[in-house]
Image 1 (cartoon, rainbow, N blue to C red):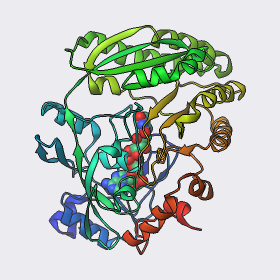
Image 2 (tube, protein in one colour; image 1 turned 120 degrees about the vertical axis):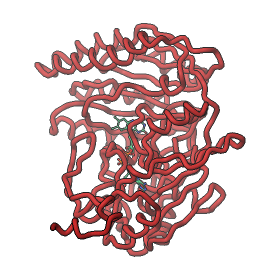
Image 3 (cartoon, protein in one colour; image 1 turned 135 degrees about the vertical axis):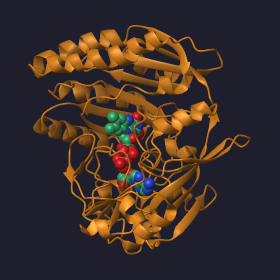
Length: 444
Ligand SMILES: Cc1cc2nc3c(=O)[nH]c(=O)nc-3n(C[C@H](O)[C@H](O)[C@H](O)COP(=O)(O)OP(=O)(O)OC[C@H]3O[C@@H](n4cnc5c(N)ncnc54)[C@H](O)[C@@H]3O)c2cc1C
């Protein structure tokens, strides 16, 4: 009989043998001492109290090393139920391990929806919220803004309930997993709605000139840029009561065929000679994506894009007040870098918030990304160039993506971050949740 065979029934159910765990981006992997999958809050409390160090993994979609631990790795994949629906107040209480796609599906069946989403729905709810994951729309804040309250197990193994009016709330929501294991959230939801979505081409210069009109003229505006094209692919989306007119065939062609098959074929061709073929295939891809396309569809169909292939990614939030000169400099940065960029670069917009660690803290934001599939050496050079640019322009890095996360710079850039770090000590005095990534941020 092995050791695990001798453990109690519930322990056997939730404990997994240690195995190698890596992220979506395939940029790192590690072997934790144990992986736990609790099914109840009591089990979770027991696990936290028994661990020397502990981190939680969601869907492992972050490039940053938030889930890396040598000791206990917890998955809340078995704590993923909707617990209560309050239709009158439009509130839903849900276990925090639920994947966004399951949450969206279950809400849809109830005639409800999330007010805003990012580009994919693979993430766990807690994982997405606690890194400040965002979508686009200058009237909409990051996903964490939809949280009305949460429950977590802190570093002493005690349960805490934190509601929106709690003074700690603005720190704990986008909490990087440093305050505890979040196992339940109450979300503000909205009645299910449709989106009038238009995709088309527009010269990059014109996007800059008419930026305010684009951003204010849609509920959800974003654009893609296939470097080095003169044109951008603009996405304008308005919420509407009109009935859907998207057929399954149309959706298959746009999202599955074009979004997936054609794109992957282009990536395969690019590999033959990146420097020469990336600009060429980017021109072809941009032409296809930017062909005017209009539909009225379910909100989540408009928000989401097909899952991209494994790639590298950094994204920073900048002050929207600087958007126009910033976009000119950003374009110049990528054009002058001497590199080829296989993926479309994405530019999004969100409303400022009051969450202490949120990159959009205190300012309406424009988010500039750099996505690519390239050699390690090339990517490192691109990342360094981008980070230098981002810091010079007052950018703040996305917590779930690639960046250096320089503490001095972050403290300067995010005015409440010092208070955020101090409050972590009150929730986790012994540093149970302080893995190398968190320590790198908080150590003097
Ligand atoms: C293809 C792709 C597309 C993406 N699109 C977007 C986008 O549109 N917008 C955007 O802003 N970001 C986007 N991201 C980034 C992504 O949303 C974030 O990295 C998010 O944190 C990933 O969620 P996850 O469930 O995979 O969490 P993980 O990566 O597994 O974990 C992230 C962090 O959350 C912590 N955590 C997880 N669960 C808990 C819990 N229950 N309690 C406490 N801490 C917890 C972890 O310890 C870790 O620190 C994208 C990423 C990928 C790979």
